[in-house]
Length: 243
Image (cartoon, rainbow, N blue to C red; front, side, top):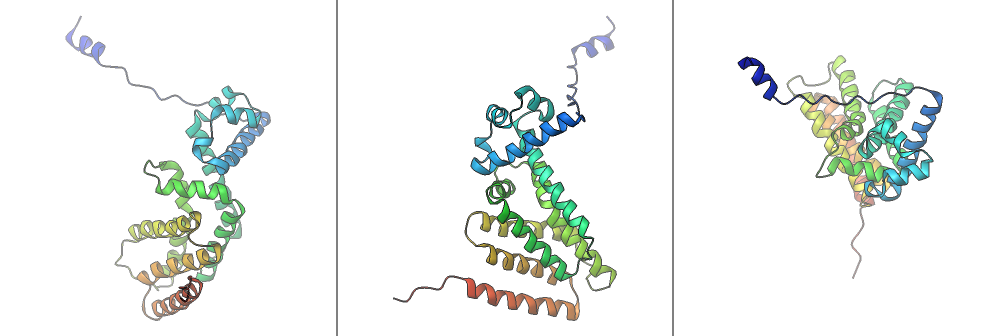
């Protein structure tokens, strides 16, 4: 056998990634939705540990082999719940077709809190993904996309009007802002702050980031608004009891 052929024989074959078949029939789409909706509920009730393929199969009334065909495994199901939910959020925001003024930013942040209130148990689970020691990369990317897009959309409006600095790494600033925003969501998910306080903290978080990039009078105006919100937050803070 030629030396080259022998070396080729010894080299381990490359693992070919399995390609999951896509199902587009109405019946399979209906089953997929039923699986995702059921998984969403189970995750909200007890977190990731409560979700098993067997339980999901029973409660969604779908064969286990169908779940494996559609999602690959349990992680695929979890990911699908996050991706589908964030698609709904982005679609809702896109339908509004609004220019990102500060009022629009605040309105969207308030709406996000309302959505978390509407789906509290699930929201607590997925916010936890962002801070888990073993991160779910795709899920975190989906979850943080709206916060990132919101800041960048506002920045684009301000930049077009010549109202921002041009000496900053805006992408790095956006990444830091997103994590600060999710720290507020985390406080809400842990019950450290109630929804009214959460809304104000989100407004303050955005104002702090925005003030870093704005110029002149605009910066001073945002800082003034930030000071007003800080006063409101101080009023909401628990007061020490008199002894």
